[in-house]
Image 1 (tube, helix red, strand yellow):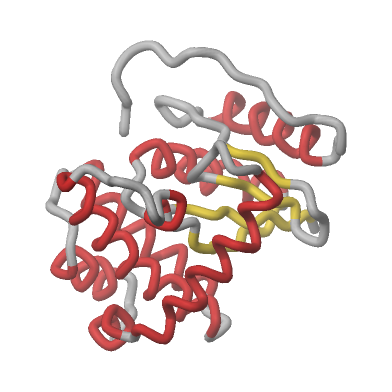
Image 2 (cartoon, helix red, strand yellow; image 1 turned 90 degrees about the vertical axis):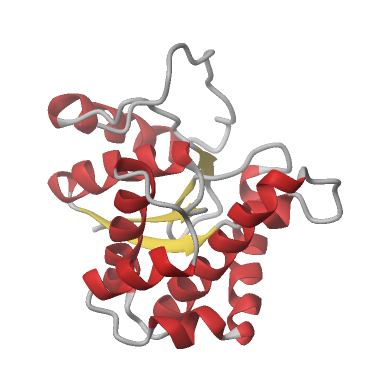
Length: 200
């Protein structure tokens, strides 16, 4: 079975849309999905970040503690369920980010110890380790999301889509992504986005 790891920041709307495409398409293609942190705050570490971004970074970092602690416990499916609940509330239902959102998402995902995971500063090392694992593979000039073909050093940024493709379109996109992940010479394919983000 092909295995992919999706590296994500839960506060990124582009990442959320891409994740919904991958969650839809992967099972039909027989692709096993794993979930890891890609903290956008670490990309901006040492930079002068506008004040309005700081609460979102903080909320994302705390949510990623939950994700990485679950992954460390071998609970990848629970990490996926937590992100689904978190992202649905954040982007589809437009609820404010923060610990309250994480707690509700965790409860909906059946994770009973979210508060302890949010406050566990030791997990920050796991969040950083995930970031340092994927960053050299995708480069310094890109962010979340990133997809890695497990068992290899091949990874890509994106794809960035809006809205998330479904059905045959989703399957075709996954087939293309899997193809480029197997080509060591491939490094970029891009066009300018038009229109607003579509979370539907």
